[in-house]
Every structure is written in C-alpha cells, then in structure tokens.
Length: 347
Image (cartoon, rainbow, N blue to C red; front, side, top):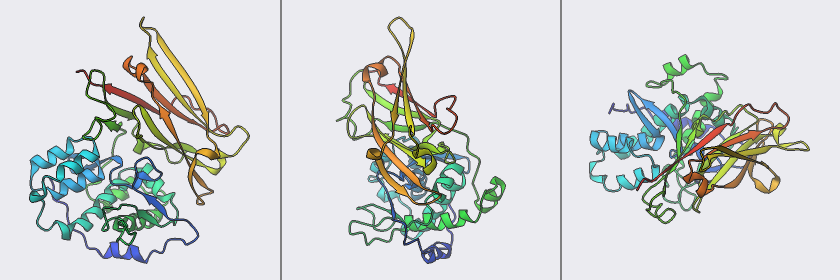
C-alpha cells in the first residue's frame, strides 16, 4: 500500500470562506436510496491509487487507516459491500495507525480529490449542485458529518464545496492538467458496479437457499452515467423489500416539460423453457408525484424516484433488466442506458 502524503489543511480551511448561496436549499446526502448519494464516500465509484484499485472512496479511506497491514488492505479491497467494510473494521481498531486522528481529515480530502479527478461524470454532477450548501447527514459522525444534533463539523461537506469551487475554475478540465494537479490520478476505464450483494444484514431479505440472490450488478457503472444528458440514472439501490430496487432519475428543465413528458423504459429479457428469447418492455411516465427534490441551477434540475420490482421467477431463468431514460424532445436512444445482471446462489 503506497503511503498517502499528508497535505496542509490551509486549502481545506479556505473552503469555509466559500459562502454557499442563501437562495438555494441545502443539499443533504448520506442515504443510499435518496438523492445525491453520489457525494457519499460509500457510493460505488472505482478509484485508482498507484497500481491498486478500490471500489469506493470509503474503501480507500479505510485502507489508509490500516496501511501498515497489507492483509487488512487486501481484505478491504476484496469486500464488495461497503457496509461489510465498516463492519469488519470494528474488529481491527487495534491495528489503526497511531496518528490516524491527526491524519484523517487531510487523507479524506486527498481521496475526494482522486474520486472526482478520475471521473468526469461525477465531477460534472458535483458542479451541477451550483452554490448550494452541501451537508453530510450522519447521526453517528459529527466530524465529517453534521451529527445527531446537526451541530457537527460537516468536514466532508466542506471538502466537497471546496472541490466544487476548484473544479468550477476549469470549465472543461483537460486530463493532462488534472494529472499534474492530482498525483496518482489515472484514467479509469468504464466499469460495471455492484448495486447490491449478499451481506451481513441481508439474510432477512434473502434466506440462504438454492437460487437465493447473491449479487446485482449494473453496466455501465452508475458512476459513469452521462451527466450531460437531459435525463440520466441518478442512483439505484436495493430497497427495504426483497426483489425491489429504488431508482432515481435526474432530468433537466427541458426534459421534464411537454405534453408527453419524459419516460423510463424498463425491459426484461429472458429465455423460455424451450430456449426461445422473450422480452417485455414497460414505459413509465415520470410525474410530479414521483418528484423527490429539485435545484434551481443550470436552468433547473429535477430528481424523480420510483420503486422497481424485479420478477424473481424471470431472474431464475437468467433474466436481465435494462433501463432507458427517454426524453421525447430528443431522438430516441438506440439502446438502453444501463443493464442489470443478477447472480444467484448455486447452493
């Protein structure tokens, strides 16, 4: 594990002087099924550091905490579910760096730099928050978050607001320039990401049995959703019911207006018992009833949410699910935006 250099906190302190707009409601983030979870360190967004890969910013953050113990770093890298990473480290506290409390703020800042420097789509989405105050809502964390009484330091929110101001100065940042500004930043290929996988808390949803759901992946990765589109997949996460996903769609003002309105297409493709390909497509209009939140920046941003029920019987037959966001004012897309795949237990 390459040591992460500790940087001066002067840049971070300067973020406090960047006053967010009082005309825009604050942006709260921290819940996987709610808007703006892409700002969270737990959001699936692959980060390259040296010659190593980490599935989330949180994974790299915790790896830095235990950097002197390569076996623990490897265990973190091999853990797909962020919640399981947090569960594991509770048993490793004796192995944390002695100066971790002094280093963790600077390390978090560098990791957030890497997260957004290496992914132009996430960088664009950060800029789309305008001048809104960004607040990490966490009852358990009053250092990086606002704490249970909302009086916490909110240092993660402050870091993000600092980076937003920095990136805004680069209208179209060139990768080469970013490479000079952020050491260890590397180009990152398109990937798939894990929407959900069996974890320490999932047995109540999927009891261990033959054909139990093990993992749901999405291609391309949710972090690679094209932020410049008039409509795109803002987020997707497992809900609190089995075989149900919570889907978030982000639209611009021009996409949400009109007689027909925007629609989301969900298609199921599977094979019947005779091996014949079957498919079913359902187009769902997005309406004000599904509106979760909006921002008055960049002409207006609107985020809609709805539950997506997955047919368990079709999944057992090898079904894949595709999601397409269609703006009726633009040309219909030639293919789906994202494909969901399901892995079942072979027990």
